[in-house]
Image (cartoon, protein in one colour):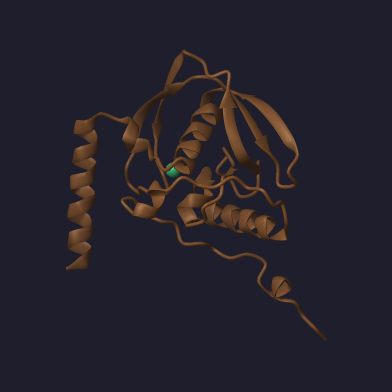
Amino acid sequence: MEVSISTIITYMLLDILHYPDERLRNAAKPVEIFDDKLKKIVEDMFETMYNAHGIGLAAIQVGISLRVVTMDLTGQDKQQPVVFVNPMLTNISSEINVYEEGCLSIPGVNEKVERPKTVTINAQDINGNHFAIDADELLATCIQHEIDHLDGKVFIDRISRLKKSRIDDKIRKESKENAE
Ligand code: NI
C-alpha cells in the first residue's frame, strides 16, 4: 500500500520567530498561486497559532514571506478560523481605538496601541476569491496588527520611544541571561 506523506503528517507546528529577529523586518510578498502548498501553509499556521494561544498570526512570523494571515478572535481551537490572503485596508476611520496588544513574536509584552477604530478589509480567501469585511473593535485592531507584520512592522514600533527602548533593554538583558 502506498501512503502519501500528507496522510501521515496532517499538520506541523512551525517555529515562531521572536523579536528582534531581523526576518520580522522583511516585507512579505503577495500570494499569486493558490495551490495545495498554500493550503498546507495555512493549515500549519492555524495549528501553530492555536497551540500558542494566539488570536492572529502572519506568515512572516513563521519565516514564510507571503501575505497570509490566520485569525480566530475567540482564541478557541477551530471556533472561528478566518484566513486573509493579500489583505488590504480601505475606509480607514479617523476615529481611534485603544487596545492593549500582545504578540506571539514578543512574548510577555503587552502595551496599549492606538489605531483607527474601523476599517474595511479587502482580501482573498484560500482559493483566491475576493471578499470584503467591514471591521471594528478587536477585528479592526487585529487585522491592522497583522498587516503591520506583513509590512515588516511590530506593534511596539507604534508605542512611545521611551517605552519601546525600555522593552528593548529588557529583551536584550533577558537574551543575555539566557545565553549565559
Ligand atoms: Ni503579532
